[in-house]
Length: 57
Image: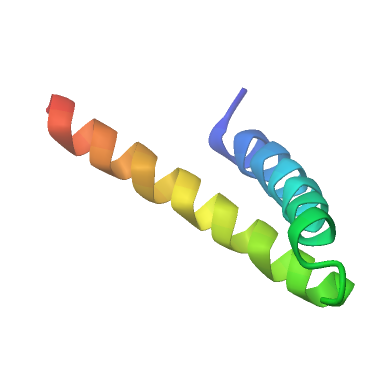
């Protein structure tokens, strides 16, 4: 898979898990907050990947 497909999969899974986490821990928050948490999860995944690649090179 090329990078674009990996990004799409990470984005979909990140938003789904973000909504799930928000519904479990903060049920009073809206769906938009869950999407925001999902985007933060995706950003965190890319930051961790960058740090891991920097460490190995």
